[in-house]
Length: 245
Image (cartoon, helix red, strand yellow):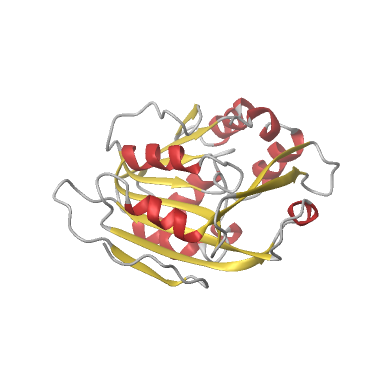
């Protein structure tokens, strides 16, 4: 689903123009994998780049990267181009990415899956255009059974509610199984994260859990020769039923 209009509202634009541009703005879980996958000359695709803050964050870790950011908000992309003219920015969604297979060393996506019910199609596209890593976050719970969707208010800096978007929580084992079935089979799946209180709006919408696992996943793309998938999910505060494949 497209939420371009919702994320183009003034409070969202203002928030991301002022926040999430520095390493100090990252959550601790976001600092685990990102500096490990960046390397000199890396080609990076940032899905849901907003006003381009992660370009500055990434080049603070590794100055020599080739960065492309995409976002569905024209206003956000305009701000990104103005602020970071040395990077490349495009207005497009995460579905049907306009890039060839294996175009990027790293495909990065933060916050998008938390508000996108159809994470599978987008994740497949991100995996397709990556040749090494996909790094993304997603809300998970153990034993959820099926995806749970409520609402989230776009309301930053104490301003009035301007719009609502989905608030999505996914079943941990379903997500892991889906990832393990990607083609070619992933070489590794690693994770880190923490429990966090459910957003107020989601709780009021009858979400039965008080906390969800804010999860960061790192997928290492496999090759046509196959082989087992290494699972390293021990740093997550939930247990998975899946095993190495």
